[in-house]
Each structure stands twice: as C-alpha cells, then as structure tokens.
Image (cartoon, rainbow, N blue to C red):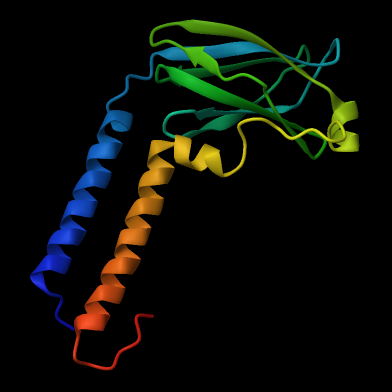
Length: 170
C-alpha cells in the first residue's frame, strides 16, 4: 500500500518531534546522588526497595534496597526532581513531596512510611492530591506519546477515508 506524501511527512515530523523531546534526557550528566534513610514510624526499615522516577521525563531509576539501618543510596543520577516510592511487604508507598537533586550534589532525605494507613487503604474520604490523569499530562514524554498516538490514528483514518479502496483502518 502506498502512502501519500502528506502522510509520510506527518510521520517524519512526529518522529522528529519525539527525537527532539528525547535529546535533553539523553544529554543529562549523571553526576548527582540521592541518599537517605527509610523508616516505618520511628524504626529503620530494612530490606525495602527504593524507587526513584524523574518527575520531568518519567524515567524510572533502577531500584535499590535499604540496609539493616534503613539506609539507601542511588548514585549517578542526572540533576532533576525525583518522585520516590518505597516497596515493602507487598505495599507501595509514595513520598508526599518530590525531591529536587541538583546536578553535582549528594542529596540526603529521610522517608517515613505509615504501614497502618496501607492496611486500611488510606484515610477514609481522602483522595491523593496530584495523582491520576493529570500526572500523565504533567510528564512531557507521556503527553507526547499520547499526542503522537492520536495523530497516527487520525492520519490512518483520514488516509482510509480518502482512499478509493474499501479497507478497514485496523
């Protein structure tokens, strides 16, 4: 099947915009680190997995485990703001505030989790702030994939609508 020149140009423009969105992520210098301690209430939490995700790009950093004192360190990070999550006992706890980690620094944090809230599913009648679909649109890379996907679907539908052949878009 031959695609019209306009469809080829649209695909090329979309691929170029994704490349341009990816370049700043690839060019970041991994010179920062994030270290700290995880506590369950006041006690150190040993053996928990600590996840970090770049708030701007959505890039997930490989997990690290806490030691016997609840300490962890994630090295070779690009300077950025990170969302932290702690996994322990089958539950995932997300830190309330993102952590800015400027390039070339070693940032220290203390994360406290509250296992009693996980067992109950959180406080009754409360909704986590800043979660849900708005998190997708606040991440430029995720939003770009949604927009590109929608553009491709529209392009296929338009191409099939203008094509003389009786073909299904799927």
